[in-house]
Figure 1 (cartoon, rainbow, N blue to C red):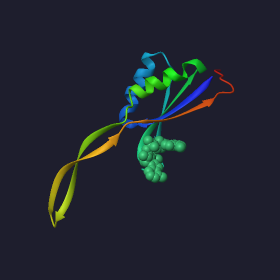
Figure 2: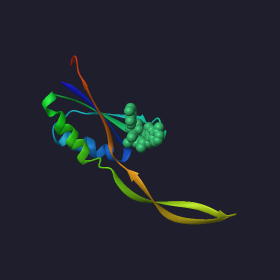
Figure 3: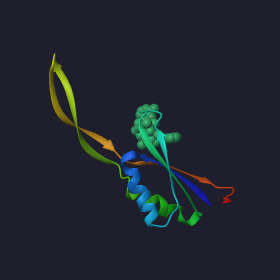
Figure 4: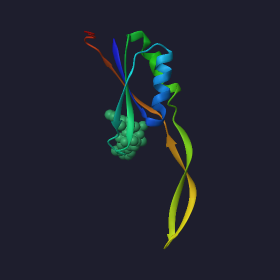
Length: 107
Ligand code: 2BA
């Protein structure tokens, strides 16, 4: 058995959980914070049999594709004068770790 840890953006986490549930995988979502950006993200953990790991990764990947979005930003160019313009940012993606499970116990 393996434990899959997937760190995804908060925006994608609900869709990832829904897709896992739809495919009958048990999953737990933990609120986490990235060490570099110090921004909230979500860590999803899934315990699965070895032969299902690739499918779990596929399901997670289908709902957390790295993509580019335009977000509005504001810059000040004079005292009290601001300009608003969109900038391109990368969002989504998943960082995945797969580790061996020594024991799986439910009491
Ligand atoms: P990603 O590499 O896609 O990482 C997204 C989040 O995944 C990270 O959030 C962190 O929470 C987790 N993560 C990634 N690699 C990990 C690892 N080896 N062990 C444990 N957790 C890991 P942040 O730390 O806030 O990083 C956000 C994004 O900032 C990263 O996206 C990367 O593009 C960039 N980044 C991170 N560290 C950097 C650094 N030292 N220099 C430059 N850019 C960095």
